[in-house]
Length: 154
Image (cartoon, rainbow, N blue to C red; front, side):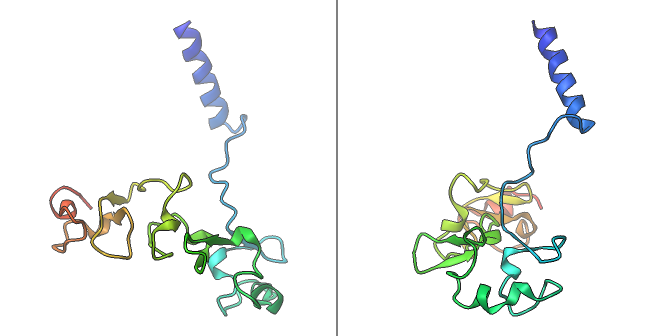
């Protein structure tokens, strides 16, 4: 039965690799804004940023941007744990403390740390539970336990 299971796993793996088996989407994160041309999708944080990113400028229209965040479609907005604050949905789980209380970096939707980040208790307010590895061994303390200087590798 172990051989049969191995053959089944190899067959499914080959089918996925060849595109014969449907793959799970890379992300179910609907943070983009589809422009009227139906071909251009811009990140949520580029909507209502006072710079037209869509050819016809629909990402800056008064109807969409008139009463932020209430006028935006809900999938473009993440509400912080403090109801007074919100961030664009593409800023959630980006490693940065955009809400000010790290609520945009918590929960099952957010990975603990991406591979290019180091897990620690950061000293700086801008990070929550990880720091970018590029900060490792730079001679400056970024983690409370100094692991960024003695353990982490860039």
